[in-house]
Image (cartoon, rainbow, N blue to C red; front, side, top):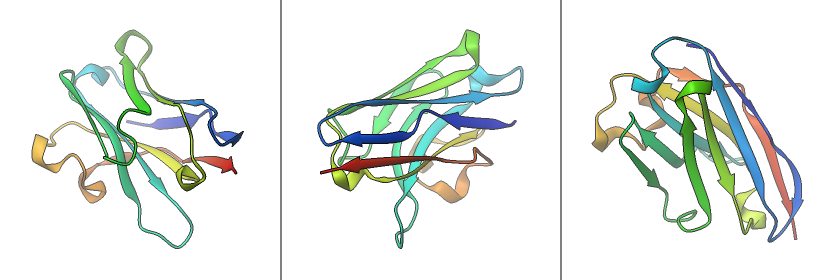
Length: 124
């Protein structure tokens, strides 16, 4: 599986961005698709996951502001980010895995496939 993330950019606080992650492969719909982010000097952290084809989960820091969705016909997962804050500034990565269990979805080290990252910068 190859992942290609896009959609990052510079936005003012309170603004919105939509990230996209295009995946290769014929079994996309069965994969758990996640978004993680990494700010300078910090560890990569969980943002949101679409668990297989059944449910969405969010970090507390983005709940109510970010929405993850997927279009299986287009092999694409999206992250709609609203009400952005300067602390959302980071490189955002999409990730995929076919065998994660629900209790492991926040653990970056367990995802097998990663995209190249897209920079999101939120100015105050």
